[in-house]
Length: 340
Image 1 (cartoon, rainbow, N blue to C red):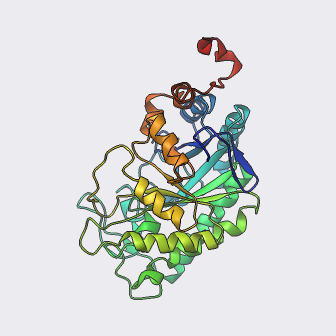
Image 2: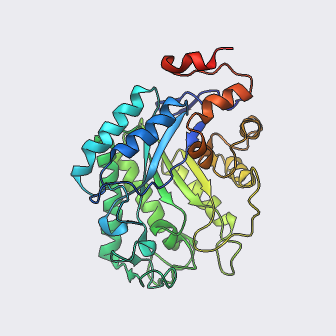
């Protein structure tokens, strides 16, 4: 049986362990959405700290898709050099790096024009979005593909689609925010159409030997009219058929969930994905090494996403190795700190 610090392979990419730094917005880009020294220090420290892979925070495929004016962007070729510099530094620490592509949709910062599946504001704080017409949907799909192409030009190892947390792909998927009457609304197949089309378009520009992940908010069952887990399990299977290699399992977004946030609270969800034959990675309160290791050993997930645990401790992976009785593998510059 595999364990937390056993390697795992996705296509031609081998992760040295199954600890993945989960994408977390830093709101520290330049005003034009470019990588800054903050990102080099932030992600570089976690690469030095021994994680198996890093997924960079949601990086916006269109300028109007930003959560804040300081979001990372990938809507222009000018974003490529900074991202390439970051990728090269992380690679220098023996760690793969991926980019999460996203678009905030109706949850965009009020400074920008909001667009969405339907003209329904997220809250009183946000603009009422302009409903995307057929041409707008096509431009959005193309923007994700162009973002993936730029990520490849920057030398990243994988791409993740953000289909969760009330952002644009999730807005189309959810009946709470999608009231469309065309082919991108209505039943589950219609509401999932944009997500699947984006995945297919991105997969077509990401080389066959590089992985594609997708983050999903797995259920809205806590809200009347929200979608159930069965809907996203169906979507996960379709995504896998299109060449998606792992489902990054989250929850929340258009509606509060009824789940209690306790250690491992999303493991039943990732386990359900795994039972459909799709590799899964839960995120959320998995920063106790014994719990993360046991979850992988039990087949409840393929990897674990560590978020706040890595904000608190950039060397979480090295310290987890010690907790689990494994020999830590720090960079040689830090080796003296791990001598017994």
